[in-house]
Length: 132
Image (cartoon, rainbow, N blue to C red; front, top):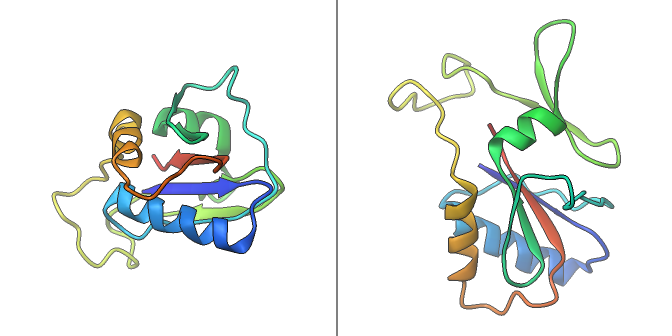
């Protein structure tokens, strides 16, 4: 799953970003519009055309995920927003257990999908984090 967040975007631009991200991942991703700044200098990222940066699953887990005292894993986005992540296919929230494990997209696949979007993405400044 891809989580996208942008900065300095109006509601129409956020909607366009959400549509592009949904197309890029093949599923409806969790999209969060937050005032944020990603550190593209030190990040393991895959830049795309149009100013969208894709952060891979390993970087997302290392830099943006924290386990609490109860062992729950949280995605902590810049600006203080956080979301609990499901870490097991045995969680009741998982309706279809598939083959028994999660399979994050490769950042290069997401970047290629974004590059194939026919809508012009120029001028969109955003970062997408692939969930581990």
